[in-house]
Each structure stands twice: as C-alpha cells, then as structure tokens.
Length: 385
Ligand SMILES: NC(=O)c1ccc[n+]([C@@H]2O[C@H](COP(=O)([O-])OP(=O)(O)OC[C@H]3O[C@@H](n4cnc5c(N)ncnc54)[C@H](OP(=O)(O)O)[C@@H]3O)[C@@H](O)[C@H]2O)c1
View 1 (cartoon, rainbow, N blue to C red):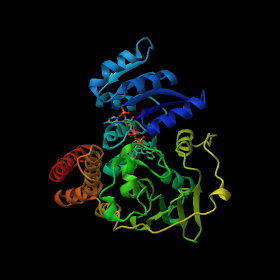
View 2: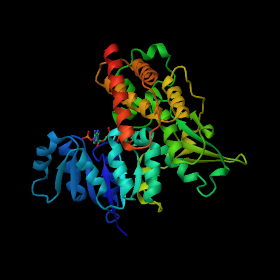
View 3: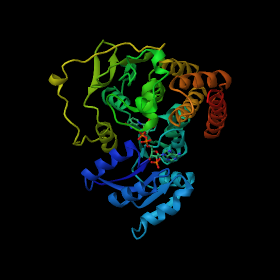
View 4: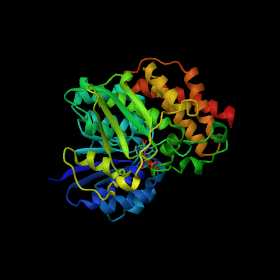
C-alpha cells in the first residue's frame, strides 16, 4: 500500500538518495512535499520528477526562481522557515528530516507534534533539543526511526522490548580523512582535504564533522536520545573500513552488529519502508575481498571534538545545544576560509567555557540558548579570522 512521504532537505546528499529510492519503487511512496533552502532549480526538478504536491524553499529570495521553475506543473510553491514547518505539518505518513543543522529543529518538531513517523537524518536537532523532541514524541505518539547509518544499525539489532539486557551500544567511526595524521599537520589541511572522506560521500558540513570526529560526538548524543540506555553504556570505536555500522553488546557477552557496504540507501530504505524490508541497489558486501576488518580506540588528544561532545553529554542540560551551535558556526567559518581546521575545536571549547549551561525544557529555551551560543562562537571566529 502506498504511503505519503515528505522530504525536508530534498536537494541534499541524503534527500537525493531518498528520492532515488522513490524513483526505483513506483507506487510505494506518494510524495506530499519537498523542501530545500535556496536550490530552487534542484528542488523544482526533483518535485516534477517525483510528482510532489508542494515545494518549499527556506530562503525567501529563492521564491521567484522556484515559482518560475515550477510554472505549468500544478505544484504549489512556498518560501520561508514557516512554510517548511507547514510542509512538515501536512498530512503525510512519513517525514524524512534531511535538513542540515539546527535549522531542522522547528520543522522536525512540527512533524513530531502531529504524531508522524519520522525518518531522522538531521542529527543536530536531537543533539540540541533531544529532551524537547522526545517529550513531544511521547505526547503525540510519533515514531522516531534513525537514518544515520550507525543508529540505524543499532536500531536493527537492539532488543526494544528488553533494553535492560543491553550492556553497551558501540558506535563505529571511520576515523575520517585525518585518522593517521599528526595534529600539527592538521593546521595546514584545506576544506577539500577535510571533505575527502575515505568511505562516504556526504554534504560538506557532515564531512568536516567526520574529519574532526565531532560527527561521532554528535552521534553519541543522538544515541542517548534514541535508545533507552545510560550514558555509561555508550562507547565509540574506530573502524576504518566502515563495514560494521555499529554494535550492541548484551549482558551475556553476545555482540550483535549490522554490516553492509557504505551506501546510505540501505538505512534510508530501512527507515522509509519500516517495518518492511525492501530491495536496494546497494552493492553487496564481499567480505572475502575486503579480507580485513580493523578496529582501534579513538584518539581524544588529536580529536578533541569527541572529548568536548562527551563532556557536553555528561553535563547535560543545554551543553549539547551550545556544543552544536558553536560547531555549526566554526565549521561554516572553516568552509568559508575564515578560520583553520584546528580553530574548530578551539572555538567550540571557548564557547562552551563562556556560555553558561542550564536546563532546556521548551523550544523557546533551545532557540534562546542556541542564539547566545552562536553569538559567542561568532565572536570567537572574529578573534581568529
Ligand atoms: N550525507 C550523509 O551521508 C549523511 C549520513 C548520515 C546523517 N546525515 C545527516 O543528514 C543531514 C543532511 O546531511 P546532508 O549531507 O544530506 O546535507 P547537505 O547535502 O548539505 O543537504 C542539506 C539539505 O538541507 C537544506 N538546508 C540547508 N540549510 C537549510 C536551512 N537553513 N533551512 C532549510 N533547509 C536547509 C539544503 O538545501 P539547499 O540544497 O537549498 O542548500 C539541503 O536540501 C545532516 O544532519 C547530516 O548530519 C547525513
């Protein structure tokens, strides 16, 4: 039976792979709405191709281009942050949240509040507002399905009926492009170097996060909100081949893992078709040709972002929101050439040290602390630019 689907962030790396699955499975999903930020032409092309009813750009200055690109299609066009929330609120069985950054927060909450099934790729939303999103999901009965390959792996092997039997969640990390690089040499790396991920092809922000290992830190916080296990039962291990997407250890010592080739269409298909399992075009895993799977402990000294994320998770309250906001500003400043790669962790650390953390119980509180942290992080960027 056909289900209706809305994709927030349809023009990005995750959004485009989801649309590839839609195109390969005619009749399985009916696309209700697609959103982007400013890529009006990419959004219009995608909306026409999948027969979406509603297309929204977040940036109001892209509205005219979207209208022109959709002329004659019968597809409704809109612009602005509130229109993205409207897309999330429209009746639709599944909402895929593939916006990058905390910009995904309000539309994610809009979908959660109406009790939708969410396929969540937008990890920053859970990091900065996990308790708010979890409480809203509890109240509305919304279902949260992880798309991040690590959390999707955990979800697949997790004993949801008996979480007390889980002794550890072990997230795997590829280690990123600088896994073996001395910290001093990281001072000279370029944006292109940082975005050259050894395994995955992803958007720029998450690629830089993978290079600093902040991505794994954000994922630790994400795991804390998605699975009912204590912080002390979360762990990270570096696994350069990215074949084992994550593991769950049980009280008897058994470890269950999900393995596969690094293709986001596997976790996307799992979340979008859940509780069914559908075919994907992903390459099959050929362990004999891979031959060797390696594992190593993460290096917190060369990659301080992972330690900062651990500390923020333990501090709780708004610390993860401050961490995330500072990281978004620092990564954007690195990508635009204002600061160096090693400034990223310094900016995040300085922001965490200067912005007081407190409890966060509502969207307004999250938005307020996010704004304060961004202002402090911008000041830190200016000091280093
Ligand atoms: N890429 C992966 O393989 C992967 C894997 C796991 C998790 N994730 C997570 O999935 C999310 C998306 O990652 P991605 O790599 O697909 O990012 P991406 O390629 O940069 O795409 C981001 C999408 O969000 C839209 N967007 C950006 N800023 C926005 C704003 N302020 N308001 C509304 N929409 C906005 C973009 O629209 P425009 O195109 O118009 O800018 C685009 O559609 C991130 O949270 C990431 O951590 C990604």
